[in-house]
Length: 227
Image (cartoon, rainbow, N blue to C red; front, top):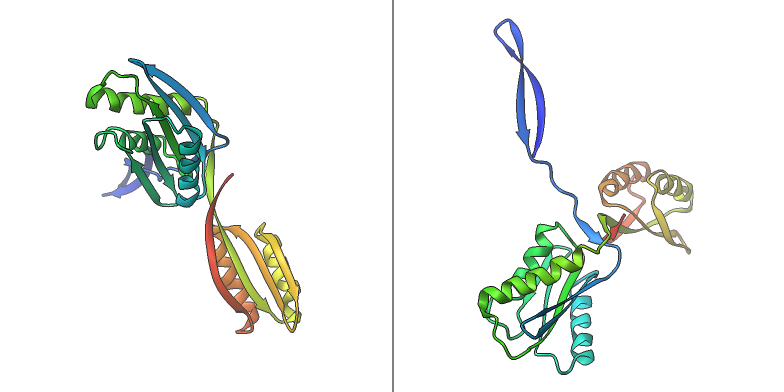
């Protein structure tokens, strides 16, 4: 919650009014993978939280864990990445593993991360409450070791321009601190470049105005990157 003040004219004098409002939080990711291990009533919980770009990458990580730990009783996981989420109990009672793990990620405002917990059952049942605490604490303990960094959105743009407009577009990309990925010279010049999502629409509008209908854009792609 953020507090601000505005001046309001009331009658013949100004009154200072306090307003409270909520600013959107910037999403965070982690710089590198972190791990933790808990031993609870002879059950081993091996947790790893790591950055991932999407759900497919997370599923590949889980598949690899199953191969590395063929004797594990459960491989539970939770994902937050690019607006997608997942909470997988993998045989634990519903809502006792994946959901608590996901709640920890959400509480810490993370994005582009997957949390996995490999459990080796020790022969003593923990009960629903015990499982929720175990999976929650395992992820929380790992994240205490994490270096968190802000995430910003990057858009990839591709367009084709006449040779006469090549210099103008290069200057616009440079001014927006964009990153040229590829430039191809054929009958016209094709550019592929990336830049901050918040600057993309304004750049396209300026370039279109300068090009007067001579610039052809292709569909853009959006991704998230750590700052």
